[in-house]
Structure formats: C-alpha cells, structure tokens
Image (cartoon, rainbow, N blue to C red; front, side, top):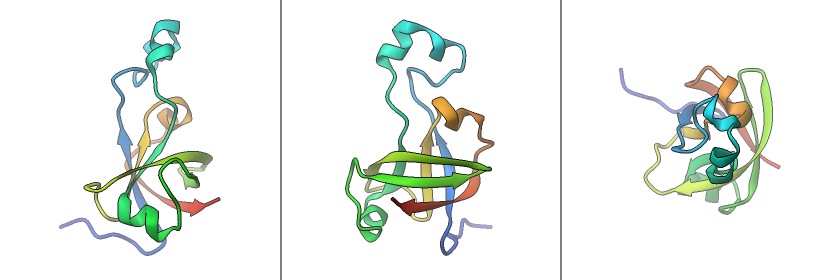
Length: 104
C-alpha cells in the first residue's frame, strides 16, 4: 500500500540531527553548542499554501504534545508529510504519527 496524504493532517516523521539527536549526548555542553534549534520541515509548496515563509512559525499538535516551531522548507520533501527535528520535546514522540500543522 502506498502513502496517501490526509486532508488536514500531516504524517509527522522524525528528522535526525548529527549533533543533539541522541538523548544523553544532547545534554553535553559541547554538543549543545553545535545543535540546531527544534524545527518543523515541510515541503516548499505546502509552506506557501499555508501562507508562510522559511523561518515562519507553526503550531504542531501530535501525540498529545502541542509545540510552536519554526519552519524549514525543502522542495523535495514528501507531500503530506512533515519532519520534526528529534531534539528537545520532539524526542518524546513515537514517530511516525499523524498530526496537525497550523499557521500561528
């Protein structure tokens, strides 16, 4: 069965980072200096459809968590999916999972 986007929902996928993606090392000051801030990755055309731009903020609801995150866009990211950087609060999520993404 192939992936089918859902209306009003995105399949939230994990986006792993080289620095800060592993729970214990993320607490180390040298790793924290190199870690990126949490973000949500969306397909470029979906960012435009939401009326947003790179760096704009969205509200993500997934797995009982509510987060406000900056957007990063990528032209070849799958339509109907969003990538949550696996650092900070996103680490607690059981991904992939369906969630909602809303403009702030």
